[in-house]
Length: 324
Ligand code: AQP
View (cartoon, protein in one colour):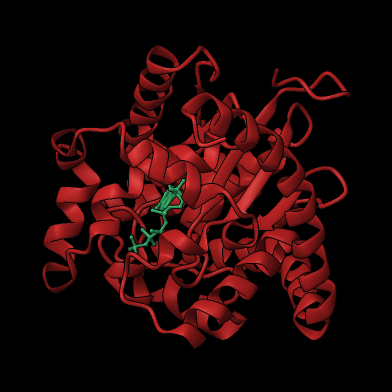
């Protein structure tokens, strides 16, 4: 049921609009999303409903959502090839979420590592959305009949829950959902600039990450100040391997082995290579930021296409459940 007219299989992935997109997000997820467009019918969603599980005000959520959509377009998500949409603009995610909520025991949700982590991270805001997050995530995927989902290792547990929910549904009603296949990101885990033993992350503060939207002066400063202990240098070299020149990368490695690597040289070269990579990206960001109506149209066209797929599946699902 999930092959579309062009014979390609459907893939879904989503990203939360919770703040600045950084190089960790790009290398760990979005770069893969861009490549996967060649092989799959991709639906990429800015999952704004999921963002409500953190304490976020309306203006910030709106701004983050628009900027994230722009960043995705600038990094290579092609709305002519893929569907790019906003989760809340496609109705049905929360309806299927409710059906799944009624299938999943609370105890299974309470076992989720990310739920436990979030309870520690925001003890004053342990909302029910944090607990039922994986049911909405399952609905995001299954409402489109997507079979493939690119995920980072940290999300494998949630994906397993999606598979469990699909099986529970199939067993209770009728075999409707296919087995979901994770596509594990082959890209690197980028470490934090200020704490290289932890992953690059917004919650470690601004000096932890290089945002896609950071200007040249900020990027230069952040890389200059990056911790250059053993793990730090390894991380900077990994980044240089991706953005820099192969011959120089090999030389840096030889220098490192001989204990002759000058951290300042590596940092200068890395800065140049990151700026070179980001220059055309930021040019596109500037264009889309100046044309918000164009971005809105891309998102609403995407939502319309996504809605057709969602409606078709939801109608069948509602019939199977007895709602129709
Ligand atoms: N450092 C990273 N290296 C590789 N991949 C990463 N991802 C995130 N950080 C890295 C991947 O990006 C996608 C979105 O991840 P997320 O939802 O965890 O993103 P986030 O929460 O916005 O990222 P942060 O910066 O870590 O935010 P906080 O600190 O607020 O939690 C996923 O595919 C993830 O694997």
